[in-house]
Length: 163
Image 1: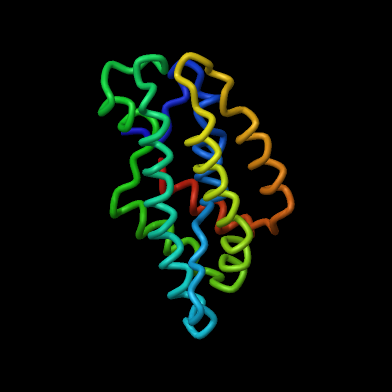
Image 2 (image 1 turned 120 degrees about the vertical axis):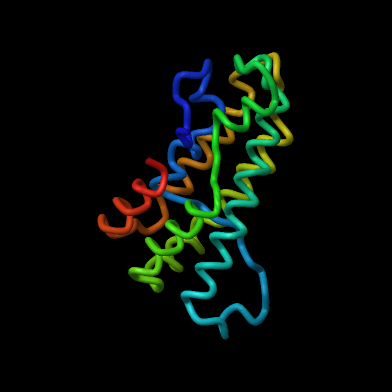
């Protein structure tokens, strides 16, 4: 089962970060006072878990418009856009574990962007207007460009998590 189905109508407006998920795996901010005391591997693992929750929320929001997006049902929308199972979560964590310090720097930059994107789409999405959330994607892309990149090995391994 593919993680991302690019053949659905209007997929670009559904959310660029879904296609970028594999490359960027943006995460939520922890906001915990004791997070600095946590080892980098543990912090990355926690962020990955939270990211999966965030992306699921994004799919929930987008799948409110399942009919307008060309899906037969809300469930087919969920399955057609993004499925992240336990094996993928382990794979993502393993990819980031190759260099937890770099991964943590990257994820801490991307975390706020993912949260802001979710909030923006939740506020702006109109099922009858397929371009209603474009401003959210544009803002997300600008923020992502300011974050550090991941080493090619980590990026390649992240891609394999969704093949």
